Length: 594
Image (cartoon, rainbow, N blue to C red; front, side):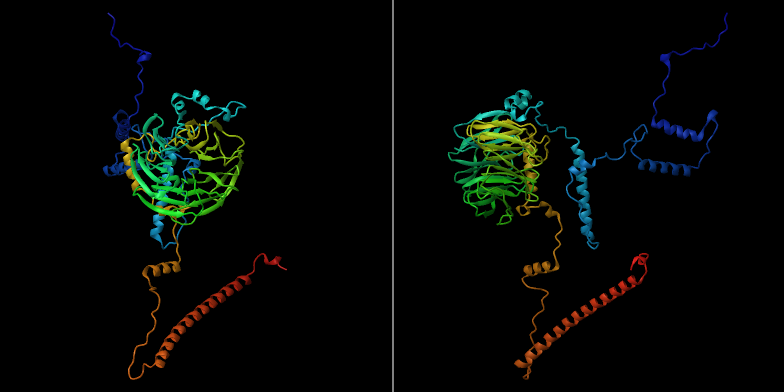
């Protein structure tokens, strides 16, 4: 019988045991055991006192807190700290330069300005980080080799794009009540049409849903949405009317008569109007009161636009000038001679940097508003009757029944249009839709919606202008906007002046104090001699006492001035002594003197 022996079993390949993954509790257990027991149960490490062990643990915990964040596995974060932001991206969202240092004694103001700089820098970094999350990007129309994009028709573009984009190109045939003026809401969702012969229509143009349609039985000069799509203003033949989105008349404002053009300032809740009687008027729609009425004394006003950056109103006149206005002054802030003939249209880009004008001299000019100097000048054979600038800087110019769109008009010389389209009759109104590559054109036969690739801003601010907001969100936004409303007194040509410190002189402060109190608190009271008896208050003795007091005051003044002169003379002599001492010292360059 064979003797029993231990068989040697070679494990198969599939049975090989893998090393288990490391766990943080295993590392802690191994570290504890290493200090106590070694091989064959012998104690290898020296036992430390309990007090020293606790101190070591505390020190290690403090170091772990100071290090970068660790995962459960115990490994350190390979990318500790905040993510790096490039300088170019930071420069893109730069708000303002750091404020200059002020004297040490104004420690409270210095601390306040330091905190303001920190908040501004933090907002700049947050905006630069969030910019990475914006998924959409603007694209432009690019033709094939040796192909001009202006020869591509709207039908070709609508056939090439997707169904949703193709539905944004359409025509509304409204020949009975035209020509039409139009306006898009700030969210770009709703369209307002106003016909010359009294027809008004509110449309959700993306879904083609008609909100309201009325006829006021009176000629219409202009239409404008107010702070939301729930209200709009109509400049009719005689007065200014306010309607809601259901077509119900809310107000008839008879102070605003013969209105020709309107502009709405969204952050101030101001409706600016110009009339045929040469008046520029501002209406606060939040309280329904007239803020300012300015007589420009320049004749009929039918050319108007606003600067979105600083809320300054630009007016074009028949003598070729463009004037800039604020509700705080009765005179024009700036007067610019732009054309040799009458100004036909004015447009300002969203950054408030460039202004584009067209005139009867058939010229299209681009101005830098910061320096009030012309940058480019283009000649159009028939001139431009209507101008509009998109959010991405595309310029649309209407010449008769032809609409031309130009690209980069202020950076490079333009020789040909970016796109062109012919409508059925003469263009009367034109406007780019916010956040969409769409240009709305109102003409004698109705309305045309054109596809202009690269015109709209691809990413919108959901807290400011959200095209997809619900009725509840719109109500919440309206309440917050009213609470944050900017007062008309803050409208200035340079908005950065509002954040600067007004360093008034002591003389100006004293004058303001005298004007507020009604008297000069520092002025000396006039000396009136006290009445004395026994013949000592005769006319001669009173005059003698007055002269004596006046001589004493004069003596003090002369003495003070002489002391100041002596002090200045003493400082001059000391300065001369120092210069003589410095000049008497020899230098290494004295050997070159002749």
